Length: 347
Ligand code: WQD
Image (cartoon, rainbow, N blue to C red):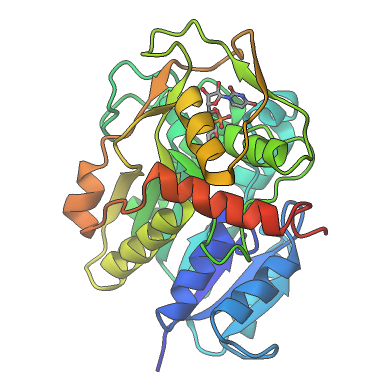
């Protein structure tokens, strides 16, 4: 009998791609999502890509909020078989927004996680993969960044991720049986190669890649490059971009490592270990879409670091996982999604 998983935030960008990978691996999924920053259309397309019919019981969708004990209980009760593990994506993730709205970020990201863990415990489920973030490293002192680097977030979003990691450690040490993986993502980008699912941010994109794809498809006029006076080879910011399909596969590897082992706590960087500058990404994307990308250089963005690149060696050692897709593939697949869906899922 295939195992049943609860995926919170499973309709989101990384959630939807991970749901597809997990369905193809034979798991049954219950997705809890409030669709505040996602579309049910994404899950319809995930089912289509996985070869599921419209009412296939292997993908059940519960419209609800991770902060609601009632919605969480409903999701656990609706599962076709007892939920073996949870992959927890549900949360808010815009750095700038978190500075303006810390109360909402602490509510959704931290209170939501606390309610989820309480519901898991009530239903006898103690295995969780948590969507953490490299943002909690703040301005890194060493690059590449190992998991032992100081956790020193510089914005409320990063503080909430660090807080949930601490909550998970506290719960896992409070009683036996907990299996926990905190996955610290670097910069998730790209899309499934089919072009049917991808990143569809609300409003004006905060992040480079979705802004770039929207310029290329004509939704935005011009990209603003936040500074070309950084201490980097071409003066623009360097980041570790990870293809969302590599990230999804990393979640499956972490889940299966936990399910196949004794209680343990893993904290792992998920990144490529390779840095690319803003200009590198612009050039690669222009090649992928076959048109120039108009941009102008403006002032640095407050809170940015010059370089953030992962040391992903621990994930390779513990999970047998590493990224497999290149920046060229990221741009090819990101363009396949945006060009086929100029307005995203059109909620
Ligand atoms: C990348 C580079 C910018 C936009 C953030 C979050 C992090 C994670 C990923 C959730 C930087 C430059 C950007 C633009 C630009 N999200 N840039 N023009 O800031 O590395 O990480 O997203 O976990 O938590 O902090 O990503 O895409 O915003 O920026 O020049 O319009 O692109 O300066 O060098 P970032 P980003």
